[in-house]
Image (cartoon, rainbow, N blue to C red; front, side, top):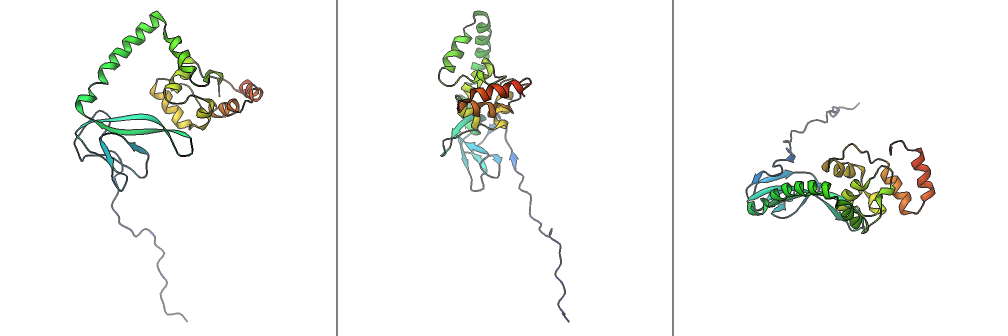
Length: 208
C-alpha cells in the first residue's frame, strides 16, 4: 500500500508581475531620450530613426523629439512585401516640416479639382505597375493609393494581407470598401486567368 501523498493538481501557482505591454507614447507626442515608446512581444513595430530596440523588443527613444508612426512596405528575404508600422523620433525642427505641407496638400487638391490634372498623375503612376482597376470595385483613386503604398502589381496585391489593405483604405478615407475578394481576383489576374476572373466577378455583388 502506497504511503506517499498524491501531488496537488493546481496549476495557477505563479505570481509573476504583468508586463504592461502596449503603446506608451503616441504620434506627435514629445519624447525624451531613454523614454519607452512601445512595450511589445516580437517585432510588430519596426524601428526607424531616433529610436532603438531593447533585448525584450521594447522600443526606446534615443534622442529628444517628436514621436512619429508611419506605414512602410518592407521587402523580406523571400521577396514578399509586407506593410509594417515604423516608429521614429524626429528632431523637433524636422518634425515641424510635415505640418506645413498638409495645408498645402489640401490647397493642391482643391486646385486639382478645378483644373483636373489629377488623371495624368494617376495614369503616370499606373504605368509603373499593373492596372489594378481590373479588380472589381477598385477604382482609379484606390489604384493610386495602392501604388503610393508600394502595391504596384497583381502579385503585390495577391500577397498582401486583407488587414493591411483595410488599414491603407482607412488611412485614406476609403474604409467603406471591403477588400476581402481582391486577393483572389489578383491571384487570377497575375496568372493570366482572365476567363476565370470574369466568371468570378460575375458572381460577386458589389465586389463581395
